[in-house]
Length: 432
Ligand code: SF4
Image 1 (cartoon, rainbow, N blue to C red):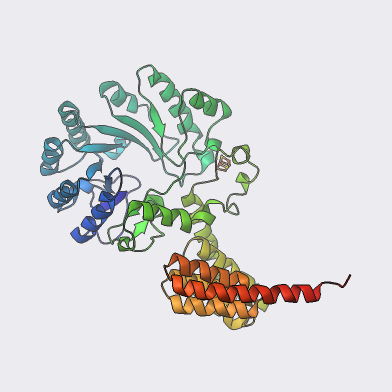
Image 2 (cartoon, rainbow, N blue to C red):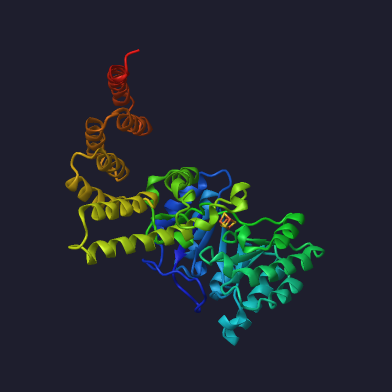
């Protein structure tokens, strides 16, 4: 699990976050650590801009110790003396975000190098993360670090929001770097965000030959300072429910696999993926979830703007079509409140259409309005030619929610409806 501890900074670096509150309150930190402690491998990655700048660092470390959680801290290498002392004394593991030298002032660069020397000498496990903020820039400087220090592992990070056709230059460097350091037993690894199409066939083949992988897009399970969960840093704009909804990391992971299952397979926003041989070969499932989510949000804004600006000029059908397009985006991105706004309007326009009722049932249920949700599923069942779909969905949700008695009663209702439906079908069959 990744905990975004604080938005505090020591310097301006690329891809820093800006969310509120600035520091994660202690009760949220401890709640998150409780969840981590339930895992088989209780390890937590403290992220945020500079997690070692959190004012309650000492209490956080004690919270980890008490729960047997292993902390790993991300750092740009700049930190207060007290934090440095703590990292040295307690042999904390670190992820060292190495930016291009122009992002450090001469004093900061000297401090970063001095700290790195100190941790390496003390034997802290340090994972190097080469921050590729601009794929066209020169990253030769990292060789100096790889030659001088022995890192626990080396990652090559490219934001998963970078268009794949812009990564070519960085991939060229990465492939060469990987090859050059292979004999020295250094294996730079790709983090998520680089798909097979970012590489030439020769690069992909060479990397496969030496056992290197590209990074699949999987939920990183982040906790934002306000206690809400997120899929990963690049998807922090789509925060999920509060962490208190989950007891274990496994539950949180299941939530993200379930809620974004459809996003994973949405190809409307990346038509190039449909005929891609990596897709056909089952190697890749398309662009990162974050790229898809950002593209879908942009679509949503376009639809909304059209609805607002062309309000009087749109025909009923055009308006309905736009509302359904917006609903589709909201359902895929789990923006249930926005989906409800669209669906209530659709219900008002087409009260006899069962579809808005079905989706309203889903959205109300997801937001904890179970009675409203049930009401809508039942309305959908009454209005549609086949009531079994809506009732079946309601049944599935009752079971999932632990309402077994009501689910059993509903089961009997479904069986009666199934008999009625079969009779209707039989009556409509042409007589032999
Ligand atoms: S499926 Fe899409 S993202 Fe994956 S390799 Fe093909 S084109 Fe690239």
